[in-house]
Image 1 (cartoon, helix red, strand yellow):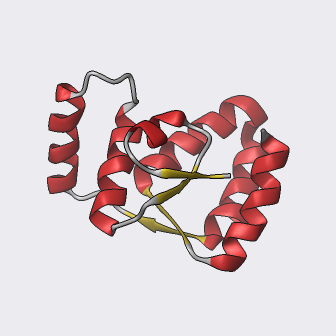
Image 2 (cartoon, helix red, strand yellow):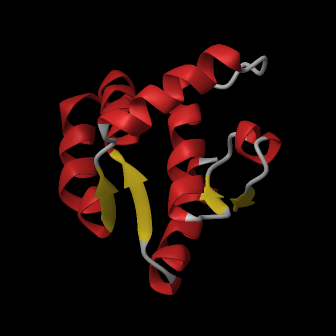
Length: 111
């Protein structure tokens, strides 16, 4: 999957800006640190995140996500639920993700 993601990321960045939120950044840093160590985190911070526009989740959005997460019967993570709400608020329809929970929530996936 890494090869597909890396190849697709370059194409996507050339076509349109990438948007994310700070919860994804925190989750990604933790994952990269566990799998690749500090050098991997440094590469993420220096080479990947600078080309991604990061929005901070505000209190109202967080409270809304907590409520939606508690009501949900699906197994999607809290960060995924935050992403769903973020995408709805930003009127985004497409996610750069492999997680089928995004498709289940009504979004298109790339790749």
